[in-house]
Each structure stands twice: as C-alpha cells, then as structure tokens.
Amino acid sequence: MPTLKRDLTVEQKLSRGPMDLPFLMLVVMLTAIGVITVFSASFPTAVSEGWKDGPYHYFIRQAMFAAAGIVAMYFVSKINYQAFRWMSVFVLCAAIAMLVIVLFFHTKRTDNVKRWIPLGPLTFQPSEAAKLGVILYFSARMSKRQSEKKRQYDLRTPKGVMFNWMEDVGLMELVPYVAILGVIAILMYLEPHLSGTILIFVAAAAILFAGGIKLRWFGIGIVCVGILAMLMLQGYQSARIVTWRDPWSDPSDRGFQIIQSLYSIGSGGLFGLGFGQGRQKQGFLPEAENDFIFSVWCEEMGLVGACIVLILFMLLIIRGYWIALHARDRFGALLVVGITTLMAAQVFLNISVVTNLLPTTGISLPFFSYGGTALMIQLAEMGIVLGVSRQIPAPKQG
Image 1 (cartoon, rainbow, N blue to C red):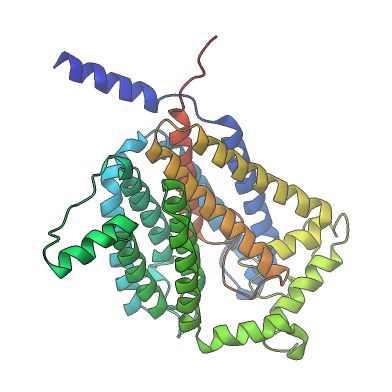
Image 2 (tube, rainbow, N blue to C red):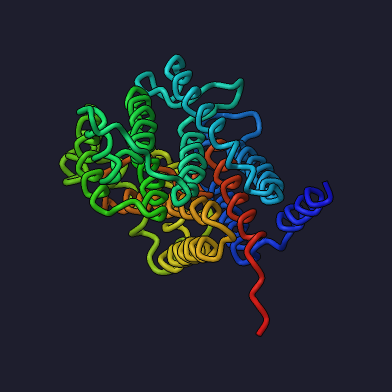
C-alpha cells in the first residue's frame, strides 16, 4: 500500500509540471488573431442576415467558443495524458456512433450533405470527433507495439500458413487499423465528406509511420487511398477539379469563389488595405468567415500579414514536433505527432485551396475559420499536447 500511494503521488506530480510556454503562447496568439479576423470577415454577412445581435453575431459566438475552448485546453492539459489510453476506445466508438447518427439529419446548410447534428441553435460536426478518436486509439495501440509478441498459428492448416505469413510480413498488425479506417471512410462517404476523410487518413498515417510500420505498406496505402478518393468523388467534387484547372472557364458560377479569393489576395498588396477595409467580403467572396477567411486576412493585412500568420503556424508545428521528440514515453510522442500532423495538413490544404494550388476541398483553417465544434476540439487537442509537455523529463544536470 505505501508503494501504491508513492506511485500515485509521482503521477500527480508529473501531471502538474510546467506547460510548454512557447507552444501555449503560439496557440493563444493564433486563436486571438483568428477571432478578430472572424469579426472583420463576418461583419457584412451578419448585417445582411439581420441577426438580433447585429453585425457582431458571428464574432460574439466565435469569441465565446474561443474562451470556452481555452478554458477546456487548460483543464485538459491538467489531465495525466496516460488516462487517454483507456479513454481512446470510448472516444473512437462514440465518434463512429455519431457518424452513423448524423446520416439521419438534414441541416439548413444543404440538402445533399449530412455533416452536422443540430443541437438547438448550435450544430455539432462528428467528423471532428472522429479525427480525435482515431488519433487517441491509434496512439494507444501503437505505443504497445514493441511489447506485443507475434502470434503463432497452426502451420498444419492452409489457414494457419496464410495467417502466419501475414504475421511475418507485418500485414496482420495492420488489420485493425485498416478495418477502423475502412468503417470511417464508408460513413464519411455517405455524408459525403472527402476532405475530412483525407485528414483522418493523414493523421493515422503519421502515427503508423512514427510507430515503425514498414514503408512498403505506405506505398500500397497511397495507391488504395487514391483509388478510394476517385470512388468517393461526387458530381460536385468532380466539377471542382474541372474548375480548379481553369476557374475562368465559368467565372459567374463554379469558378466564382476561387476567382474572388484570388482577387482578395492580390488586392492586398504588400501591407493590405487595413483591418476591416476589405472589399471582396462585401457580398463577393462566399464563405468569407469560414473556409476562405485567409483570403480576407491577406486582403486586409497584405503579404506581410499573411507571412506573419504562416510563420506563427510554422513555429507552432515545429514546437509540436519538438514536444513529441522530448515526450516522456512512446504514447505521448505518438499523440503529439498525430495532433501536430493533423493541424499541419489542415493548414497546408486550406492555404493551398484559397490560393488555387489545390481544388476546393471544404477544409477550414485551424483557429481562424468560423465554427464552434472545430475550434473547441482543436483547442482541446492543444490541451493534450500541453499535457504531454508537462511530463517532459527535466534535463540532467552535468
């Protein structure tokens, strides 16, 4: 009993260590800039929609979600991240259940897409929970990989020979991961939500790679994902590819959004038009406060402002990987790798879309795009990273 008490005290001390202040400061700075940008980008939309709280409608809601998310980030960072090992199964199962439930709901956003569960005046996007569930479960399972013994099968039967060969080449250990991703991909296809599926696959691949899965399986996986992406392409998604190749072929319809985005970015010049002075958000640029919010930032803050935000994201990503490299154990390292890679992929894809480097995918910009579900879950994920940073071993004194 005395040993048990001493061990618990050690765990409590570990979870109460200092947070990584550079990472925390970068998260808070990006969140604050994001909320302010939502205020500017959503102002004309809120006025035209005639909300009770006037032009401040989207800003007030986003500020409330940001405040709640920062509080949640702090409390999550105080949790001993080892608890996420057993919680991972329940989070993943709950996320899959919500992906099923969302198929029975239609929201006012569109009649053809089922991505949001209405909760009174709010909506919840299950795909955001699925990202976190996959990261937690894959990290927990992969962290035990080195301690697991290879299974032995009866070589006197064809079935046993086949399973033993699969075990030897490393295919057998991939079965549960592939099965989980397959179920999620099918459910996301029914929404449909190709961009969310890509992000989940990227985060999962990062964890498997960091966990030591052989490289040949990633080559096979890329081919399979490519085929899956082609199969998941809906009519409107195929049209997006055509539009991406030549937006000016249909400037008044399909190419309108990306053309307005490029106008926004180009008209910002070096120093921008000034905060709140953007023109394209005045009824020209669709989704100005959401997926294309970076275009508004570029127009109002110019190339200098765009570079500042990109540098802040770059520093946050680098610091995240630094925390992963110095994590106390394998589980913590894999958690941070998954979360950081997910954020990095989302930033890259969003910026690529608004600059027409890639076709429109519907991926939001972390900490910037309007949306309570995404912002709060992103900040909770940052809390997990900070929780891992609390337990980084102190450097040994020479």
